Length: 214
Ligand code: ADP
Ligand code: ADP
Ligand code: ZN
Image (cartoon, rainbow, N blue to C red):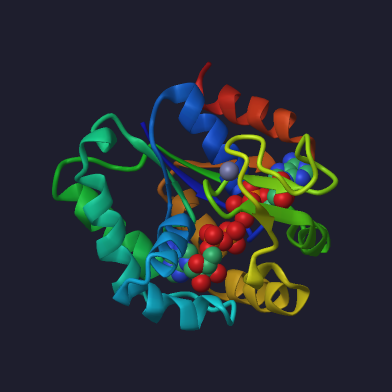
């Protein structure tokens, strides 16, 4: 099963993708997580990507596409995967289609998590990420058991630099310009599924499970 998660920054793609990955036994592939790991490890790719990410801009397509396509070739992706944060532009979607077509495959579901812009800033300013394992929480909607300590690994929680309100506005306009057109792209292919992302996390998850089949 190959699934793409679509939605604005902060819509809950990562939160849902982690739960889907666990339930269906497929890997969660997040380009944001891969890029942040590259920054943390001081790679050349990380250094290039950081200049864009800090401004809330997209990293150029050629840097991201190869990264994702290489990831698919790994053994754990043979039964499918859930893509979170990729594709983010029409050229990325076309590159993905070409790579899959070349091996006789295609995407099964594109799930769009709908959340209006008004809710996004509140989501992002309350988001906290674990520096060690990448788990995400929200100070109000999904708090940790102990303040500022990751439930999963005991790591420290931080507010991502690009989740500060001034950068969030940029990311939202980049989303509307460059990523939102993917909704129509996948609609035309007949694989688009819409879910209401404003309800409680577990209700969003239930709606997605219904689409995917329990
Ligand atoms: P969000 O929580 O907003 O969905 P991500 O963690 O997916 O954020 O991405 C953080 C940043 O990483 C983006 O703002 C962008 O700079 C970069 N990025 C992640 N995925 C891609 C992609 N597919 N194409 C270009 N840039 C990307
Ligand atoms: P994305 O990957 O789309 O950027 P996240 O999954 O990281 O989004 O979610 C953004 C923030 O909103 C996180 O702090 C998360 O805990 C919180 N969140 C996710 N889903 C919901 C929901 N249904 N209701 C309230 N808060 C949510
Ligand atoms: Zn952790």
